[in-house]
Amino acid sequence: MPSNPLTFKSISVDHTFHSSGLPVLVQPINSPIWQDCIDDIQQLVEQLLHIQGGLLFRGFSVNGADDFNAFARSFGHDLLNYDYASTPRNEVTSGVYTSTEYPAHQVIPLHNEQAYTLSWPLKIWFHCEIAPEKDGETPIADSRRVYDNIAPAIRARFAEHGLLYVRNYGNGLDLSWQQAFGTSDKTQVEAFCAKNHIECIWKEDGELQTRQICQAVSTHPSTHEKVWFNQAHLFHVSNLDEHIKETLISIVGEENLPRNVYYGDGSPIKDEDLQHIRQVLSQCQVSFPWQKGDIMMLDNMLAAHGRSTFSGDRKVIVAMAQGYSEQR
Ligand SMILES: [Fe+2]
Image (cartoon, rainbow, N blue to C red):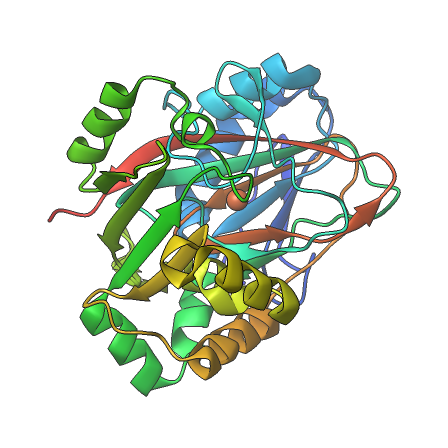
């Protein structure tokens, strides 16, 4: 908590919402109309987001996806498209997507958005339109804490080599390349890959494999803090259920698994190292129930997010802005 808590006329700021200090709870004092509070909100975001990593706006009236779009855009950046997708999503309105179409019974592990590639959004917003009846949280974790808590030897190995992500699209096993790239035009896929340092290999059956070497650790552009910034624990074959893993390998072979990850030099990553990383992520995880109308705003480099399983209806939509890539 800052020594001089920030005070504003139109919003209250509560650092005690969660014992970890993440996220900071922001509520209206009088008018619940976010436009009435936007000057204070923008000042708060400017002063606090890069320190705390996440803010939860609760009690503001947000009228649908277009209003959420306007809220997200009010911070000065156009919203980004969900290019080079990793999970299935639908666009609700321009720049606003369903947070994921993954089935309700599946947990989505903590991750920083698009950390499996070389450019990513610096800001991400989630808006709860329908609160889940049971569970369905969007857990978060401070990526600086994750970095600090990973065993130095593992951290050093990851940082030194970087990561090679290998994706095989389609075959009924994962997103098709058309879904992942949002086009049916192979030349557009090739152009996107060339621009983004992604190796693009068309296979004899017309399916696609991509290979890309990316960072495992990154440095926040404003605070210069080190953050754990990769999706190795999601892409690695050890993320699959043992039975599914064996079946898939026997059918398509390891080289054709829908996704996998290696060290940047192509050498394998040990299962137990990823197990350690998953343990650290779980120790750093912060969870809270959604309320209808909530908006959570994260600095995508300082805070990872995931999704719990849920039952009943749930609608959380997402927007991203401020594309960034490290100089290479
Ligand atoms: Fe995500």
